[in-house]
Each structure stands twice: as C-alpha cells, then as structure tokens.
Length: 149
Image (cartoon, rainbow, N blue to C red; front, side, top):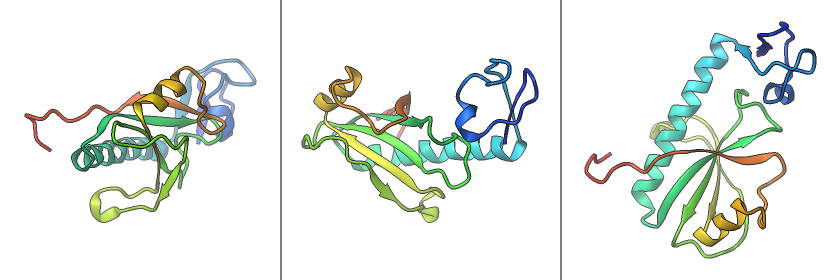
C-alpha cells in the first residue's frame, strides 16, 4: 500500500500515480512487500523482454506500458509490454493476454501489444491510441549480440 510522504495519507491505487489529493506531494512510501513485488515485476519484465528478443528476429524495441487505472504495485497486475516488430503486419492495437509461466522465470500474467514500426510512429504522434490510461514507459534494452543471453 502506498502512503503520501508529505502528509501521511494512505492512497488508493488510482491516487498512487498522481499528486496527493490532500497535499499535492508526489513523494511516496510503499510497504516493503510492495517494494519487493515491484522489484520482482521489473526483473520478470526484463526476463520476458530478453526471451522475446531471443525468439523474435524482427523485434527492434520493447517498452513497458504503464497503466494509470491500476497501481504499478498491485497484486495480480500483469506485466504490460509494447513490442515494435518489423515483421508484424499492421493490425492496430490488439492487447494479447498470457498467463504466468513460472517455469520460464515469468511468475506473472502478461499483456503484449505488438506493433509495426509505422504503427509505433502513429502511437508516438497520437494518431493511434493505446487503451485508456495506458502509456509508453521505459524501454527494455535489446541484449547485446556479443553478450549472449
């Protein structure tokens, strides 16, 4: 659970990513459980991205998707990735949902949106829209060819 560092108000998942409604602060305290979960989700996102880069030759970029409608640290929240793939036919924004794959190092469900480079440019220019509340987050870098897996 997140708490405003400025005034101590406990925040709902919807309030976590916005200024505190009581004092306007963006500083947060989160529980050690949620902090550990956030680190676990970040690591699982990196593992998932690396595996996708290894098996999909046309992938040029992978980005995390942030969702203002659900807190980043929510039990059961899936990993959301936007994948730019030169080999993907243009078909618009189609989130594909996958279950957890613990044996592969991915203990969380995931949602993948795969787009062509042209569609990615349209997302960047707001000509093509992600689902309500979703936005492009940090890029998960492609592993170096020399570094292996």
